[in-house]
View 1 (cartoon, rainbow, N blue to C red):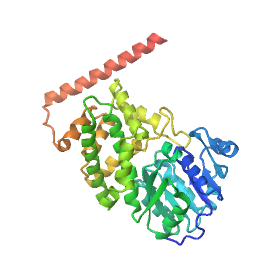
View 2 (cartoon, rainbow, N blue to C red):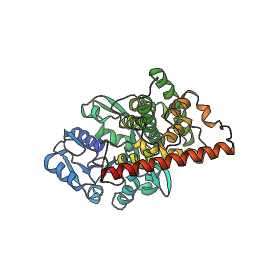
View 3 (cartoon, helix red, strand yellow):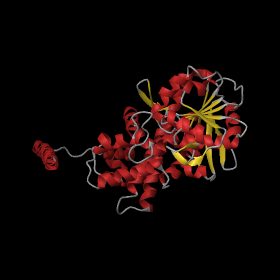
View 4 (cartoon, rainbow, N blue to C red):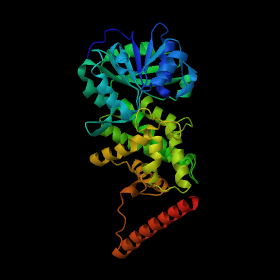
Amino acid sequence: MSRIKNDGQNIAVIGAGVFGTVLAGILAENNPDKIIEIWSYEKSVSIQINSSHVNSKYFPELILPENVVSSSLLRNVAEKADIIFLTTPAKFSVKIMESLKDYIRSSTVFVICTKGVAVYRNSYMPVFPAAESIFGENVNVAVASGPSHVDELLHHKKTSWILASRNNDVFDAVDRILSNNFLILKKSSNPLGTELGGILKNVAAVLFGIIDQMPDTGDNFSGIVFSECMREIYEIFTYYGAGIEELLSESGAGDLAATCFSSQSRNRKFGEHVFSRLNNGFKNNFIFSGFFRKIIPRNFSEPELTVKFLAEGAFTIRPLIKIANSANLKIPLFRALFDVLSGEKPLDFIQIIALNPGLYFTKPAKKSVKDEVRNETGKLMTFLRDKFHFFKRKNNTE
């Protein structure tokens, strides 16, 4: 950790998506005497922000203050910044941070606002440990997390976030430029525990989007699912060295509740889309092979194709299960979600495991050789029948 020198005279936001645009607007309103520079991967977005103070591609409802400027050159933004806020999708975070490390100045405060899992050195992990490894002790890495629906931030509806850093001076520097009468920051010294809540609540919200569409479920069932999600999240917290304080904070239970129960949640909406497609006859394995690719961006310039939002929970579920497998974590409901999304189980498997989590780890009775042959033969016949109908429809349209 290094001493903070310039106390936030130059402020930068990395990422001009929905959240990054709104955050830049808040910082500009809070600090009218400072220039807020926002980096966009897409040059056309930067040009529009500079010419008309609007980001029509990602958040056209917001007219940005005149002290917001934009650049598509990462070096130009990083070299002069005292405080940097990272808001890009987590899957791009490592690539961006590795580019930044050559330009970022010593003593800079780097605030992680991303809520997802990164891939660093061929391993899945939260963004914070990857950032500490990339930047070393010269950069003051922090995490900001809490309930943060952008529409509410836009209309100045009250919320509170946790700002976590191992350097006590970081909180004061960020608090001065970010806090206002509707957004309150609270201090923590556990960045990893703070980040975990924001990551895991996205997976839980996908679950809630699915169960909310199911027949014969209501508030009672939602309560059961919420309690099991809390238990499984706490198991993951414990594995990473976080505890009950982080779980019950704004960045833990606060963000979990706001995301799972709100119609504004992008991850919940993603779950609703999953249910709709599976319930309307799409093959389960189509989720990962096709539908996910239409929602999950493959590169910087493709953040949204089908449903016009990014759901970090869609990225997170696969690495979460890989981490759980390596650490032998008991997270049956999250495992059930993964099984449904990957085509291994039907939709109602989530209901079964939510009501009886222990069933997930009960080994099924071993099938006889005759049953196995019958099952595989049935799969082959289904495959051939589907292929026959596909080519028949194709020939009829030509």
